[in-house]
Amino acid sequence: MKLLTAWIKHLFKKKKVLDIEPLLHSNVETLFTEWSSGFGFSLPNGCELTPSDVAGNYAIRGRNASSTGSDYFGTLSLQAKGNLIKAYWEIGHTRTPQHGFGFIKGDLVALDFYYTEESTRFYGQVIYKAIGETLVGFWRENHIGEIAPEEGTLKNRFV
Image (cartoon, rainbow, N blue to C red; front, side, top):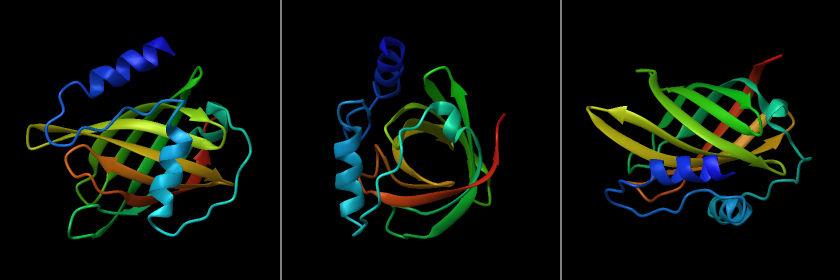
């Protein structure tokens, strides 16, 4: 847990516009409830998960948080690393790579992520609720401040 906390602090040490707190075991359920309520979602509770339960490749679709609110698509790969999760996304027609690291609490997958675009590094967070083979989630970035939805559908599991 100390390693995860240190990594999260490292990710968020250079905040540019919006100050967002790192995802922690103590706040992830509250944040997911707050984020999902803004979209009128009421999702059923799932079962307790382990990192290996969600490890696999997912087809992702979501909506950008910016004023355009445009839809996007991509892929997400989740790998179990002990008690933690390593994530790799390729988003949109440019297949912009994004990297993340996080944990599971109950039926929630919480990830801090980053990506680089035009020599600028951006940071954000996503929290997914696992419902069967679907991840229903919400994300935000430190420079935007808006919450946006994202959904992942399992394509194949890692063994």
